[in-house]
Length: 136
Image (cartoon, rainbow, N blue to C red; front, side, top):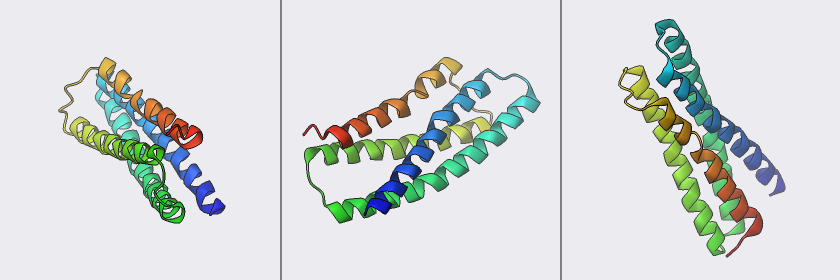
């Protein structure tokens, strides 16, 4: 089980690295006026979203494996799983925003994306605290 846990942590860390960087690309896209630079940023965002999705799948599957192996015990785990569902929703929201940028339909400011960029940091902090401290 320790190998599963180790790989789960690696995939989670990698997935979150993508979730930290993708909205930063959106900040730049929201500010960009040059068509060539916009295309370059869109290409970066597409590749990063695709790669981040490939990291999210094993992270989630390994998490389910751990859950089945250890059982569903403690209120902290219920809270953690609720936050994981929010992370998955955030990931899909990133994909939806990417599609809007690709269609030229972004209606949000770079400032909004700066705040949006902080969400995964807060989610990761809360999840790690729940897993390590197990407050309830």
